[in-house]
Image (cartoon, rainbow, N blue to C red; front, side, top):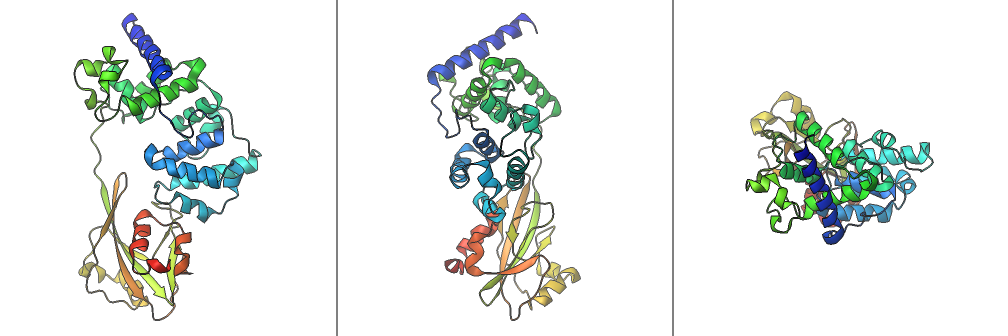
Length: 361
């Protein structure tokens, strides 16, 4: 590192910490606490989730499950129901597994080293750094979206942040900048700075204590950072759901395979690799299910859409009044009034609430 780079880094750290001391007014319920359980809970909820969306979920989980032992002993369907709408349901599965592991194998005591925390299910380097620094003040730098944006703008880093080279570069730089004696304060400061001053759109450069040395601002291009590699196009999946009702009982099943929405409930369905037509429904592989339901389809219902990170889900729903009780593997009948007790993907939960039988739920 040459003298110019060293000077820039010292300027960055000293001014960031000064801003945090004098001007950082950002409030969050988990900020400043030392309980590793609550910090871990907030970090898992906020993975791939905006703070504004995750805040109510965090407050609800802390209220329902005030300790990790409470979460570990909770009914799994209930936990998934409380997670409903937050997405990325593998996080919830890992949340339950980790709570049970710590409760049963660690006597409810949360691990207190970076390596042990990193070994927990659903915990990667960023989450382990956040928990270990915020709960135990261990010297590990956090590198989330806010941090990457601040660093790439200030230091003018053009390497794509979603490339292996970019991730390594930023991780090394973040660790070099870390105030190791005050890791918890520094990590929270840079994250808050990215969220309130160095925002993705319309950054508040006029009130930025780092602006005089910010390379991206010197070239009038802060919103061009961070750089990313070409975005992947979303793939499409098409689901035709059959809302099969027999005497006020609905046929539902828990998704079994490792796929989107694992452990959530759904109605029987046919999946297509393109938008279904009446002709596609005549395929022999679909014939058995349709015959079992006594169903002849002459018109395809309107499709609803749910966007996931790299996936576009198209779903339509067909009401089926069963004349007899049919049996399908991995499916069971539940009373219509019990549907609200089960966790469903967002697109199905929205349908249930808007459907004609929603008043019975």
